[in-house]
Image (cartoon, rainbow, N blue to C red; front, side, top):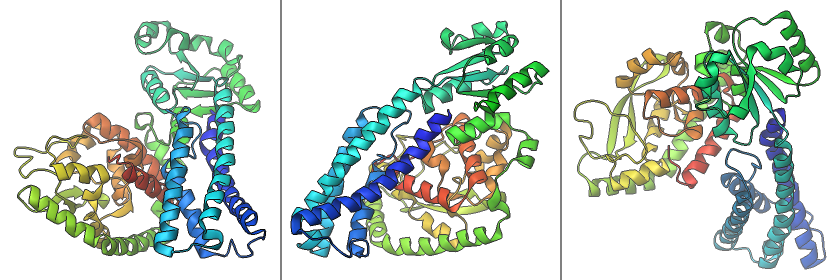
Length: 462
C-alpha cells in the first residue's frame, strides 16, 4: 500500500514536473529547427506561459496525471491522445483568433512541431510508469485483521477504490467464516485471530487493524519486528485516511477527535480570515463574469415552465444556523407537495433545462450570492436541508461535526461521491466531509476546485 501511495501521489507529481520541463524543451527545439536560433525570452514571454497553462490545465481536466487508479487500464493512452488533440485545437484557436500571432514561436510550423515533440516523450513516460505500477502492484498483499464488524465494508472499499489491491483477511473466529464467505472469496481468508502470530511471520506489504481488543505480548513483539523491517502497520481509520482520503466514522470515538492531529483551520484565525476575504473577492468576480449566462438561463427556465426562475430553500449553515440558499430552479414547481424528498441522479422531477443545469452544476451559480453574503464558502460540506437534519443526526455518528465549518459551493464529498439519496449515502459523504475538515488547507481547496472544474467540463454533475 505504501507503493500505491507512490503511484497515486508521487507519480502524478513526477509527471507534472516532467510536463513543464518537456513542454519548454519541446518549443525550444521546435524554434531552433525552424529558425536555427535559440529564443532568448521564452520563459519570460507571457504568451508562452499561456500556452503552458493551457497544456497543464487540459491535461489535468482529462485526468492524464494518474497512471494508477481504480478503473485505469490502457484507456489512459487514448485519453492522453484525445487530450493532446484538445490542447492543439485550443492553442491554435487562442493564438490565431484572439492573439492573432502567425510568426516566431507562434507560427503554425513551430506550434505544430512543439506539440508533436512534447507529445511523443510524454506518451512514452506514461507508458513506462503505467507498466511499473501494474507490475509492482501484483506483488502487494495487505493483511486486514478484522473485528466482529468491518470486514464487509473493507472489502467493498478495497474493491471500489483499488480492485488491483491484493489483500487477505484475518477473521475474529471460525464462526465468522460462513458469514464472511458470502462476500469474501475463500482465497482471501488468511485464518482467524488465533493464528495471528503464525500469520505475521509471512511477508505483507502492510497490516491493517480493524480490532480494538488488546493483543498478546507475543503479537506485539511480532508486529514490532514487522514495523522495524519497514512494513507499515495501520489502525483502520488511519488506513482509510491515508489511502482513500476519507475517515470511517463508525470506527471513531470522542478520544480520536480530541487527540488526532489536524483540524488546524478551526483555530487558525488568520487562515480563516484569508479564506473569508478570498471567497468574497472570487464570488464578486464570478458574479460579474457569469451575469450574461445567468440572464440567458433565467429566460430559458421561464420559457419552459411556469414559476420563479430563482429557487429559495432553507439550509443548515455554520454552527447549525439556518440560511436561505439560492439556486436556479431545476424542477417543476410543487415537486414536493407533501414532504421533503431526497435529490437523486436522473430525478424525474427535473425539467429538461433543469437536467442540463444540474449536470453542469450551473444551477448553483446563484449561490455566489450566498458566498458574497457570508452564508457559504467556495469549498466546504454541502449544506443540508433542515427537514433531513434531525433524521441524519439521529442515525449518523458525528453528523453535527460537518457544521463546524461553513458549507460550500463544492466540497471533497462532492468530487469523490455522487448524489446522496439516502441515509447510507449521506453517511459515506460525511466520511469525506470529516476528512476535509481535518485536512482543510489552501492546497486542498485548490485541488477540490480543479476537480470540480473537471466534473463540470465532462458533465459529471453531482
